[in-house]
Image 1 (cartoon, rainbow, N blue to C red):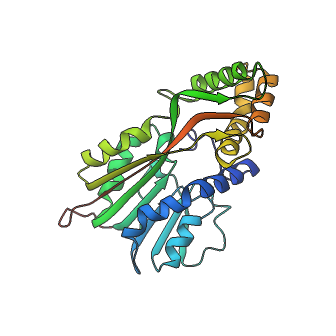
Image 2: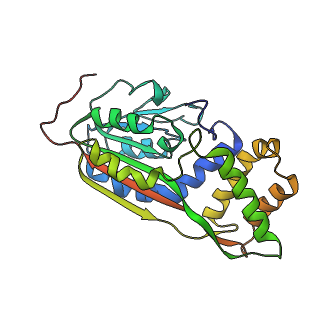
Length: 266
């Protein structure tokens, strides 16, 4: 996972990314996982970031294991076991789990389908696997730009980013649209999915999130020949409220392990 994941939380930009994800997704995440949460429920939070979901789970009386590659932000978490762990190396101890939640994690992993199956197998009977991912509006649709020429900058930068960081050895930006079927194939029941989003507007939360991702990828894009002037202008665009586009969607999917299904021992 360390080689596969392009965004790390243990940087200033990584912390900002985590904060923006929380602002965009935490409320919907809580709505998704709340049916699985009760006092004493065993919960596994994968890619815990700064711990906002783990903290909420613990506050509701759950027993929480929070894992991430970078645990620097996972501080001051009461009643939460924090582990530095790569999910590629297997499901951490503490199960079987009544809830396993991962947000913007599996899309970065080459073994995502196999890992989904391993997570499903680690559920207790009646336990929920809940996944959240980012996917692209394909192709991105510009709604408005501040200046002539900005549309070309937008297309050049996004085209190079997609070529460099997606595909067989990169991020799977359509994985979110496939999760529903994989949850069902893993034998889970009550599979549900939700697709939602809003235009990315410069200076607003989604726009700042797009800008943040670009800033994290900029050094690698510059090495691949992307003009610094294009990178700088792209970053400026997503602070300008005149910039509007459809670019990102978010997908939440969940499934429940049947009562009476085989359960591993931890």
